[in-house]
Amino acid sequence: MNSTKIRQNLNIITKLIITVLLVLALLLINYNPAMAKENKDISNEQDTSHQPDIILVRRYSNWAWGYSDYGIFIDEEGNIYSFSFGDSLEGGYPDMEDVPQDEELLDILYEIQETEKPTDKANKLVVFLCDLLGETVDLDAEFTSEHTACDAGQDTLYVVNDSGQLIEISSYGDNTSHRDCPVANIIDILYNTFIEDITF
Image (cartoon, rainbow, N blue to C red):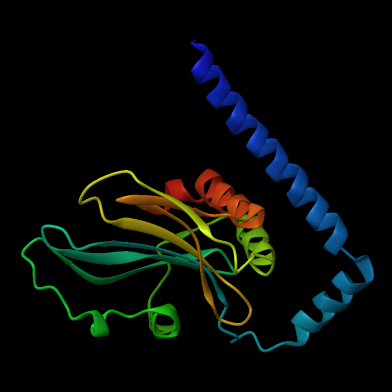
């Protein structure tokens, strides 16, 4: 094994160790036994018809050689749902005004959640951690981006905060970009390590 490969493996292991330590620290900081019991009592009294909040959205779009726009979203229970706004190699490009974004996108996803069945299940603890971390993502952080492909489209990961904002975490494809925020990087690592393989 050459030195470059060893360095890459060490970097991955280091990132995972840091992620685990940060997650444990966050759990210890935020865990209060009395509050946990209180929350449990409250949740037992709550209406079970509550629609679980959407936490993560992964969307792929490509306008090269045809139009594709589809993805998945994950709610706080770990339920994974799929969506598609078009997948055609024969063109038929929509007007940009007709492509749902931000709040409109979330409204559509909640409608899908209400009427469709989940396609899979993600680890609920990992989703909970992404939800927790999503509240502390630096919204003013810039992105580090580089051109990495041609006509590959964009595969973008978002976390949804308590205010209902879609916060871009990372994107891969024609351009690879990451938000310059340690918390966003941890969400990216958690998703790619524990969830990515069971989505698309």
